[in-house]
Length: 240
Image 1 (tube, rainbow, N blue to C red):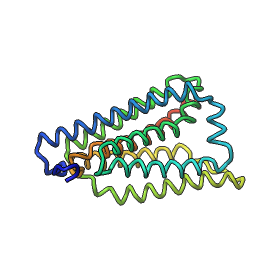
Image 2: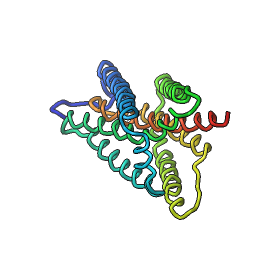
Image 3: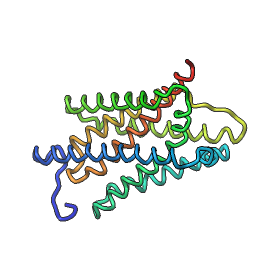
């Protein structure tokens, strides 16, 4: 199929090819997570924190423009990662997405680092891995096809995006609108659905040459899951 070889979807591939594809997918996911951690560590220690807040919060509408830029970069990264024309371009797409995520995470991680409770970030990371690991294991054990979740996830994502845009726009008109802890719990549920959906796709629907695209999809869901778990942990920590 692509690059001169004929690749089957995972469900129809030979057991050895399917196992190799799954192993490559999760190896690339682990690599993306480690790269994210490395880039984040560099940014947190090199970029002036005051400059970060000036950039992200220069105006009430700043987050909206940053969100739009993030969506554009994410679309480009995913398009490249799904490219059938060049393996190199697929890696560029994955790398771009990891870099953009690291930049988006800067403000919340700076705030978390400044909190009195220094276990906030490790706690959120452990909880994220626990949720991801449990959901992944459930799919691999049951071998259930979660493709039926696609329309539900699409509608949920559009509703969430609408609420985020409203939360970005209203402060510019002097109106307060806070996406509180309940929104974070709802987003965790949404990302859990995405993890089930993408994991079943890895087992059944991705072609065996699409390990980079599969890793990017899983990384996107895990990163967003971590964001909202971190928000919840920070919220409860600040109440103590």
